[in-house]
Length: 140
Image 1: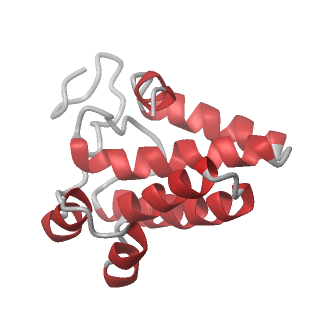
Image 2: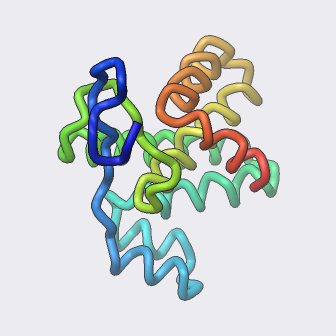
């Protein structure tokens, strides 16, 4: 499969989210994720950062809530960019990583609060989006 074409079985082309330069630059520059999320509430990476931060400090319910917002904002962005509810969302395309990180964080938090059905659905969704995402995220 290529990033621009259909896979060999005729599946949908990968969805490549546009780069959101301003919020990405703020996060990379050290602006707190909460401030970025408040200014750019559709930016999944800010919500994913908040979810990861909350999980690290043991605030699993807070992590779940932040991850759910990032996940839904990411779904909105994917749909705006041609995604039809299935198909590849490549980890290698950096603008996709905020959504995939939020998805991962949601699954991890769901598992931690014994939402096993949701955790399983999220795990499948992540692996179907891009099998390379989980190994990259497990190291974070």
